[in-house]
Image 1 (cartoon, rainbow, N blue to C red):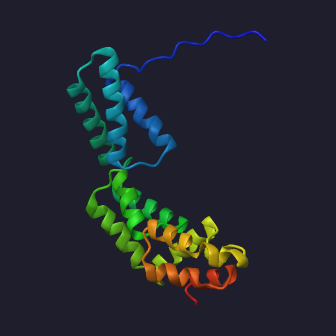
Image 2: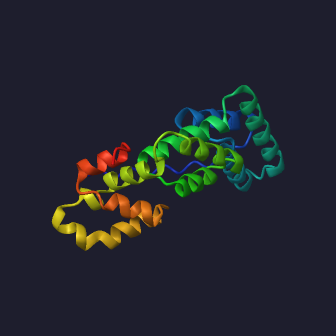
Length: 192
């Protein structure tokens, strides 16, 4: 078999206004983002371009701020909507209040918007934290989703997994006390 020569890896493009605009739009086509997260992505591009091409990082920073400000004004970026959507998605996947707060903070969402999104989830009818714990248990196949003969042996590990995810001990114990997957679903719906 013939070996093909490796293509040399291309370096970053210069951090021009057009290139950063193109990179920002391409990123937003693929991912939902907060303004803080988009700012971080574009700043990395500017830093790489400055190292390779010797361009002025301050000029790149100014361009990044202009792009982010324009996108916020036009509604292309909406941190409040992003925080609400991400919080709801994370809750459905089984994230605790603490997990949601941490994830949104990592994505560059301001603290007041994070608190508003978590408060909106908590204002929904039923115990959303309990429902999230049930979703995590089902997704990770913990407690009631294990084979009955394994439940006692893995109880401490399951409690630890829920604690690491940010759930309180009462919530974790209540969820793991469900008899089986059906009882867990009943608990998740708020009927148990």
